[in-house]
Image 1 (spheres, rainbow, N blue to C red):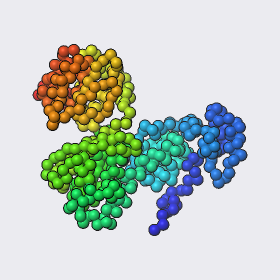
Image 2: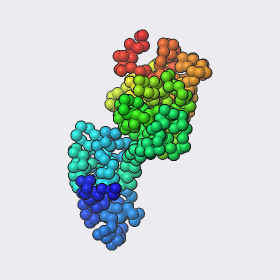
Image 3: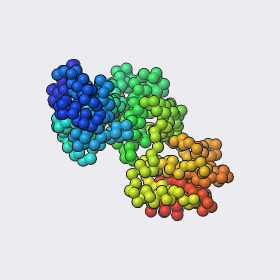
Length: 445
């Protein structure tokens, strides 16, 4: 069936990704800003045609103007802010509010949704585009400006992975794989271009692009729900047919080196892969439920730049107090919070801030999520007898100045950590608790 036209989809035609307020007006502003010269503007105006690109796009194509400079001038002209799409990632709720066809047609990236307000990054910050977005989403729209190439790149990264899964689901059904769902080994061992393999790869790809810390694959009555944990909260991403669940789970378990025949006991595994040129470690945990095996994948992006302590969003007075604490010669600082709240991120940012060649910093972690230069990191291996408590004892014989204990899990580790802090070491650690008061109760217990 032929694709629907823009008019049939209810979209007014957009003549160009950049719809500017008039070539002469923008051109003069670019010259006044000393971004281009009079001669460059004159040359571009001579080459401009009614059917061709508008003046800003034409100047970029001619090499006279950088896209970022154009975005900056357009933002100043419109009184809007610049969006840094190299760092800002679209939130799932915002993406759901703007269909892919609208995003591509207009050239818009939905970034955040707060109630009835949708923040959107566009290359063209015109009232026309704002009106189109508001009409299509039914929401109030706040525009931010970004270079056109970055807008298109983020649209590709945001929509392509999850939207491609539907095609693989149909291919899975068309090949009769649904009838063989009781034999997940055959499905999971399929070639790399098999539908199940592609679906798992796309789920992981989208999880990394969305900055998810964990991916949950949850079998239910009539579907398998896929959820991402982003900034501490779980978000529904998509659902696949329930008949496909065993094959998806088996594929993940094979990658993680787990026993796919055993479905009645919890298992753990891990594997390494590469997504968008970024090295990724995936820790896998499975658990039996009444609807089948549930799998959680923890994503550890080895190439993601670490936050600085100043970038963690602490209020100024809190950051000042925290910085004084972590620069103490001895004592204990414990980061407390629920799963996904940023405990590990805070600890790593702290190490990056206090690391120096004059100090011996040692860590014991499970797992080692990021490799830090000039820091001695130990990986927990309980099968070999390396536990938090035993590892901490060995670290104390290594003349440490600062010790990071990834997590305090048992009374023995807590006792040794406190003793270390009382004997001239600075100890950093994390503890699962809802707040600081609950953490004190856990220590007392």
